[in-house]
Image 1 (cartoon, rainbow, N blue to C red):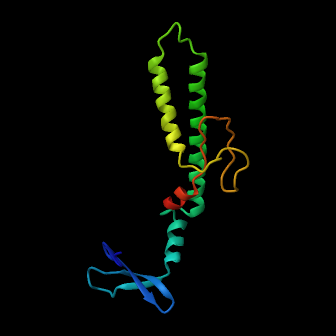
Image 2 (image 1 turned 90 degrees about the horizontal axis):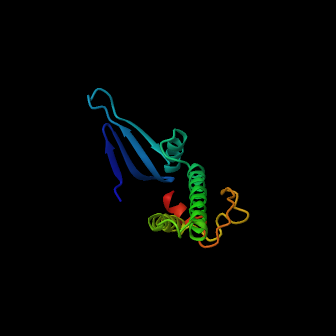
Length: 155
């Protein structure tokens, strides 16, 4: 891991001081008129500043966004699955060639199932943990669920 970064007139260096790991930020004056300004910050302080000003998402913001996307994916999967079931059971195959439409619909269902495959089993069924909104679903062939491990890798 690199312990120093320089970007334009600012350098950041990972250092160890009496209190542990810190980040030393130094603003250089290219004209040479003033001494460089330096401040020592704890990594959590720097993260808090970045979260406050929207440079990076906070854990709660990321969790909310992930929950929203998962809920939407589950809903989309369930609608595709319901349409595929309806096409298989109620469409007019005797009078119309619907093979292209059926193939495309099954491909969409396969994609939706794949996108939901890494979610924890049971997502969208029954009561949800506090961080995850409840999703109603009556899907029987494939289930979409939450993915704490995947969420942790994104944060």
